[in-house]
Length: 371
Image (cartoon, rainbow, N blue to C red; front, side):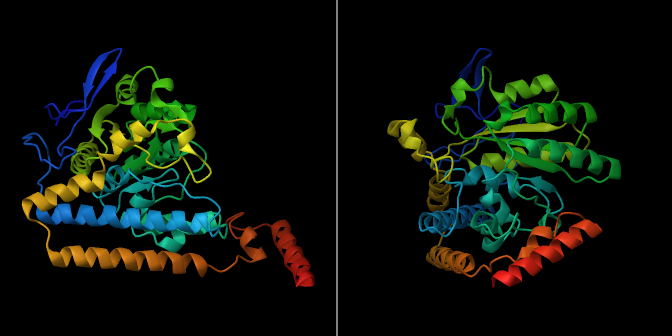
């Protein structure tokens, strides 16, 4: 599988650019047909397909429940990953548990692959914690709300991995809008110069809030990455098998000492940018419907059905697990304890100064007078 090339056929997504036409890597067509691609470094097995389908179905069910909780006033904000499950699940399942990941702010499908719990994923959005989980426990960093900053964090961490002599890789998620930020471009350049073992994974979901990709850039990101000195891949981000294959190839190359990699995964943000956004104000229903027919879960499910890899037991177990997750998510949200005043001071410094301790004592004493 060569960088920036891919499967061929009339179903290929092709993007017209000033530099010519770019063909995406695609192994599974929107109707669920698996292509023959001798170059694809992926053995498609029933076990792999069922596992990827389960991850995506559960991620979507969690996402739906979190959205409902936000609409009911239980979460202050929520950013859905609806439609982007293949990009996140396919890439995460191609990594080792020891590989470190830097997400942006809608990577709950990726986070679930690392075992981050519903409570931890919702705590920040419920306003009971500055961040929900311990990054060291999962090798999965906390969400980065400052656009693109995680690309620099990932590059610095990857340089440290190289100095340690480890063969782990680092992956940073960001969106097409973040690719216009200075932080991301600085990270691409720094990674190339430092030969950092990092994968920059762009989920190009076509919209940076209300600004379309066509108004953001004059050339696709995977082409621009080559100019920085990165190896580059262009993949169908709604094809979980292609994403898995490309990410596995990129990680393997980095472990052998290859250059840093950028993967541009073409996907679509089916919901709004966040629950405070109304996408109907800036995009057409017809466009959404085109992408709805490319649903990542539906196409993998179609392959599994066509190959006879599912069973009534598998379907029943997955449906039951989805409902349990929904109930767990709701219970987790409603049972989160309110933070104490002391929480504000917990992570100000590794070793708090006398002044910080004095401020904490004063604040706690003051709040007792209000009780």
